[in-house]
Image 1: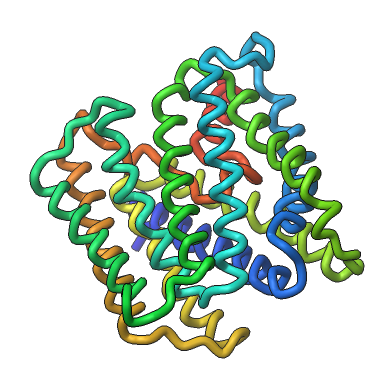
Image 2: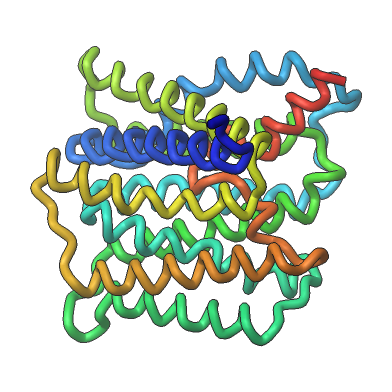
Length: 318
């Protein structure tokens, strides 16, 4: 029996997020030795040739001056902070706990879409967002456990990646792909390069190979995600991101001897169910779909956003 398009889309998405999770394992391994600033700097540097080759295929005329400079600045700053924060969180927190907190991003996108995009969020999605944010509190367990810098970093990654995603939705149709791709990457190199002299540790060839592997994994996962969105409906593909929690449990146990505790598992379950409800609720409405139209992860400051890759691919095909 031939596979349906939605089944193929789901399979591509599962492959993409499995590869992304492997990428995050490499981040965690390197984070045990190096500061996140150094990892971000070199991973951006290794990803730059890939993006440069992509931009050579961009036929849109224009220069690199942003049409919306303040929105572009906000998006660039948010992308830099989200990537660095996520890398730090992966370095110091268990994988499953980090994912659980970062999974709050779709809920935050729903909230930010109201003032930034002028979207309307009804009662059902508002309740789902509130329930999901309660799930964040379950994971954090205020008063029962110490609130660490890792927890703060994971929450910062969720907030800033949501800001970056919503800004792209607002200005993406008018800004050149080159602007949206290059500005966060250049900012990462400049900002991390300024910090690097204070945190730098020499990297042997094996660790540099790990950084190169991160760039390869990120790009391969992005291609799989593009294939997923081209093949299946967004409402089928989008929830597949939550499969990363399963990879986190497997990888965490195998490589780092981690086992999620019950509050983390319960909180993650609440966040995931709330996020899935928001996705399906958006699919039933034609005009308000900020989460379904946001396709990338937190690392938008290092690797190109999926929506931009798809845009370039469409232009190349025209």
